[in-house]
Image (cartoon, rainbow, N blue to C red; front, side, top):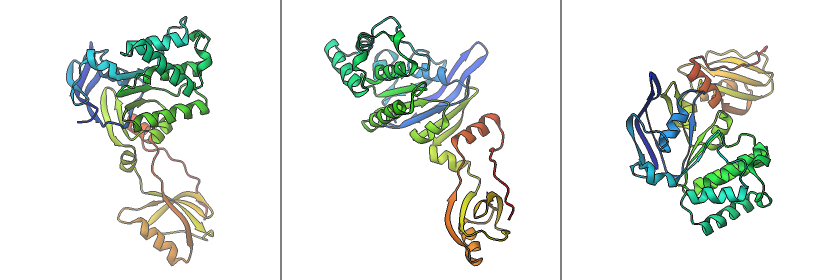
Amino acid sequence: MGMLEVSHLKKYFTTQKAVDDISFNIEKGSIFGLLGPNGAGKTTLIRMITGIFYPDEGEIFFDGKKFDPINDVVNIGYMPEERGLYKKMKIGEQAVYLAQLKGLGKHEAIEKVKEWFIKFEMQSWWNKKIEDLSKGMGQKLQFVTTVLHDPKLIILDEPFSGLDPVNSNLIKDEIYKLAKKGATIIFSTHRMEQVEEICDHIILVNKGQKVLDGSVNGVKQQFKENLFSITLDGAPAKVSSEIFDVLGGEENNLVVKIRNGHKPNDVLQYFIQMNIGVLSFNEMLPSLNEIFIKVVEGTPLSRQFQTVTA
């Protein structure tokens, strides 16, 4: 059993099935992507995991035992998309207060806040008010207050919203460090390129149901289309084969789709027999963004290639 196991979870609001029989398991120290379109049930799912909502059916197991919302919540750090900081309160005072709510004594809370403020170059912010912060500065503070009590489970909903590239990398590095130290992280976002870069494992929910579950690479392999990009040592006069179809490219850079019953080595052998050198040969896996659209909308993978004139 991992850090978090969700088993046949259901939550209904009148006639709406917000979460409809969802199960998954998250290993300790992993970075887990929770994906889905607006209204898919992600927020309801997170609220049950954090004890804000009780499920109508199903069970949640936290760190090897049945989830106890009263006692286990101190081991969870939740950074919601909608920020919940007190605008009139001073930043340092608020961070210490939130740390104490998570079980830290006042002295320990002050030391932890100072440690994180130094790490994020926020020392001069101590006596500023939340309302005086930019969106990006507020985002950094929200992240700090989410993780400073060293929670076992960290839930981050759109953590990079409003951040410039420098601060995005700063928080990204801290996410990696926290996972390496053993924290389990649930990462929810609409930015698929961030999911590909950061996450080990993903699930995709749609209309309250889980529709996809697997490692990032495993999911991409599941939706691959036998597409390859080839760079040739010279431009062939004509490319025609029963092994593959040329879908796009130009001159010596081609995009090909291997036909059923054939292997990548067959393509390489074809060019060798034509006495044309192959400089690179790479499989073109679909992006998570393409897979997301295909699964949610039920449409084919959308890929555009320049027509080959050779």
